[in-house]
Amino acid sequence: MIRPPLRPRPRPVTARRLLLWPLAGIVTLPLWALLLHAGTAFVRLPPGSAAATGISVSSSIAALLLTFLVGLPLAWWAASAGQRTQRLLELLLAVPLLMPPLVLGLVLAYVFGPTASFGQWLEGLGIGVTNSFLGLTLAGFYEASPYFVYAAWAAFSALDRDVLEAAWLAGMTPAKAFRLVALPLAAPGLAVASAMAWARTIGAFGAPIVLAYHPTGLPVGIWIALSEFGLGPALQLALVLVAIALPLPLLAMGVARRAAR
Amino acid sequence: MLRVDLAAPPSTPWRFAARFELEAGSVLALHGPSGAGKTTLLRAVAGLLPADGALDLDGADYRRLQAWQRPIGWVPQRQGLIPHWTPEQHLLALGGGLAVNVATALERLDLLRLRNRPARELSFGERQRLALGRAVFARRPLFLLDEPFSALDAAARLEMGDLLMERVAEEKAYALLATHDLHEVQRLCQRLCLIAEGKVVAEGPTESLLHGPPNARAAELLGYHLLGGGIAVHPATASWQGAPGLATVDGVVLRALPRDFGWRVEMRDAAGRHFAADLGQDRRLPAVGETLRVYFPDLRLSPSADGE
Figure 1 (cartoon, rainbow over the protein chains, first blue to last red):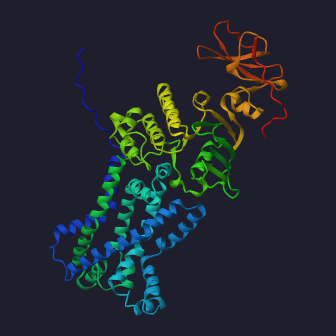
Figure 2: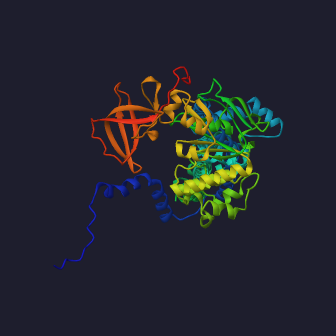
Figure 3: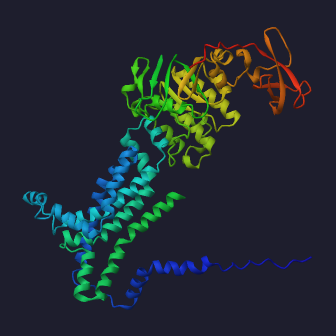
């Protein structure tokens, strides 16, 4: 008997297939709106955009480096601490994490501002924090670091303890084992932590608007553009922010995907 | 001489207490059921857990050293290999250097053709051979091995067991081997330490402990069944045939399972105690419910020596 040639069976239309892209479209609405705007509007950036971009990028890089410097050892030690210490740390870190950025800015102004004794002492040393590059960096650091520490802590906690212990007993010092074993193994998680920190610091608005309105970075620049020139120029600047913020998270996703293979 | 006299500090969640000595160039087996504390004791000796007491190797006080300062060849149960490192990298990174050149070591481990493959791409057995090689090819006076042969086939077990014995003899080293396998204990270990609930139940030369456990708990851990009158019977020593010096035991057959070209016959004696006998196929196997007479070496445990 001759059988008719096999044809691929049509895939059934399921709710999942029907709803996947509309649901994704709802969540990614800001992206489509920005792209739509870029496609229809005449791209002319408001004055001072280049300077704001430079300030945002440099202060975010500084804030990220500060986050690594403080957050990496903190996350590493937290991952190997006792349960009681871990519970306490979780609780302490949750406060800045949950604090609205504007409130964080008020708190930072209370500590580093010209009316605070610590702020006055720093000013006496010639280190002015408010309305300075340092203030902008600190605001970015405080907005980003709890996210980084939580994610890096999770990455270090997921490491196989046996591997580290075997590295020590093969003659590696803890510092060498951290560098050669722990860091590469935790790299995917650390990449995600860095991407989160970067996204938080480059988009930081609430804390900088209180602590360091000047020098003006992109988020505050967008706010000024909105109030002075309207929605169009503000959205142009927002596109710039997205364009410079995106590469690092994309790179982190790539690192994590490569490590998972 | 290796002197171990360690106990868990009272404030910690771990429970272990062990005291034994070992001559240079010999292997001591830590044998006991799962959860008995074999791994915990090895980790305490390695310096990975806090421990009170003394740990002395050829006069050197190991308790003063941190884990990474202790010259130990270490095989954890889950191997502890660095996933992105190759076998060659694992061996070359050993502190204190290798006892042989890397190619010789890899060839001995049957990993030469895989020398540049990351550990995560090796099979479980290959990883276990690499973990053993990393421990025993190091120039270390003490090897701590936690079930190092569990994933190996019979031939590889023999081969890697030989390697361990060779390296212990060459380095005049001390080795502590945690294992469930009494065949391995008999072949590789001069001394045996039986552990249960974190404590040493009995410790001594392997052969004398295997054939004459000093107390009921030790006998149980070695697979003996305890019958009335303090008689301990081991299935492997059962015989169809009576002879002088053998105890006669009658039992009702409960079931028979094929085993090593013979049978393991599970039985119940008149007092309702269960025991088993490994018997050859040279006689007709009795049916379930029939009474069977078997003979065992007459091993009587003193009721006072209970190991507690």
